[in-house]
Length: 59
Image 1 (cartoon, rainbow, N blue to C red):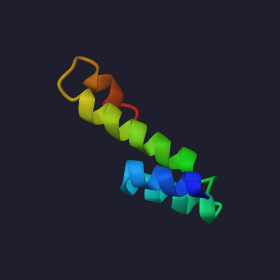
Image 2 (cartoon, helix red, strand yellow):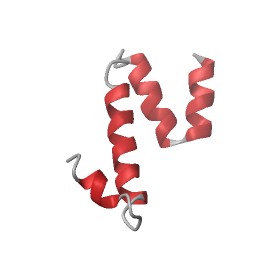
Image 3 (cartoon, rainbow, N blue to C red):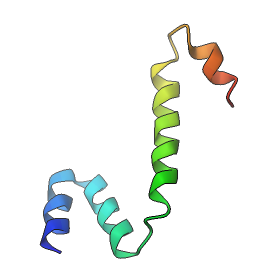
């Protein structure tokens, strides 16, 4: 448990969120959140590039 508290102190809000997921056994939701985060970052970083029209067809 001290590892989780140390991780929470170092990572701030993200550490607290991970600690919450581990303690409440919500390990099944973390892959969904990571995929949503990756799609969001992909859209934000590809807005000004030539790849943008191909990304928007995915949605």
